Amino acid sequence: MDIITLLLLVAITWIGLRFNMAWLSVISGLLLVAYAFGTRTETKPVSQGGKPKIRPIIVKRRYEGPASIYPSQMKIKVNPMWNTKDWWENALGAAGTFGGLIAQGFQPKGR
Image 1: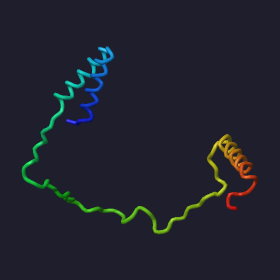
Image 2 (image 1 turned 135 degrees about the vertical axis):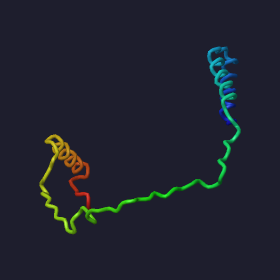
Image 3 (image 1 turned 60 degrees about the vertical axis):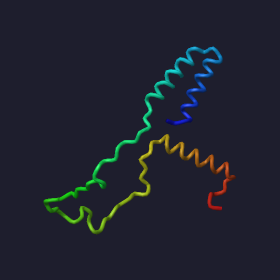
């Protein structure tokens, strides 16, 4: 049983009784009784036999296919001016860049 939880429930029940809040004392009292009867202090029994059994995975067929699905050399053509953003995303980006330049006094970030 956790002593902190038990003390908290007892304190809430006491506050309910002390300040004439019957609903608080009834609810916390029920929670206290449920907690007292619901908690278990005994530990679970350890399984007999010691170590767990580990069974290996046995593959009965060989892989028949290419060693790699990727070619030895790859060529990728990229258009540096390619942009998939909408017009409003580009406008917001430009406005953010301009606002950043104004905030920095028109000095680039690298200096």
